[in-house]
Image (cartoon, rainbow, N blue to C red; front, top):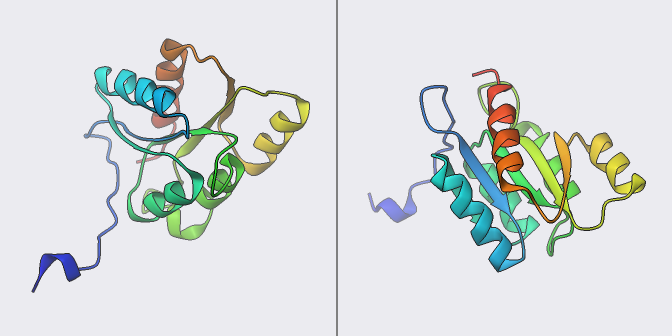
Amino acid sequence: MNTSTRPMERTEPTATKQIRVLVVEDDTEMRYAIREFLTMTGMQVDSVSNGKDAIQVLDRNAYHAVVCDFRLPGATGLDVVRAVHTSSLLGSYGSGPKVILITAYPDWKVLQEAREAGAYCLLRKPLDLLQLGDLVRRAAGELRV
């Protein structure tokens, strides 16, 4: 059988493996900086530039955490949060990845929408990468694997 015709199997994070993170950011430099920082701290990081691609990647792979811009082309950060809470993205470990939303435009409405959608937290840009790394590790530790 040709391997390109086989359906992709959904991968699951486990407690014995690296923390797996998906970074969703449309700004190329910001996406690269976040991905490189988290990789340097020992995490396994994938990245995409829009919400639509994020939802597709999340449907095929499981992550401990998602770092996601609030304003994205294709689908918003809120759309990504909501997609994580659908049954196809939950995975066998019982809960989906924790979504850390990031925004340059924080206000009360954005915070309220993020909470209602089920986001783990909302961070303001410019990011403190050390704080982000700590939040990702904390979010990954809250998963029941």
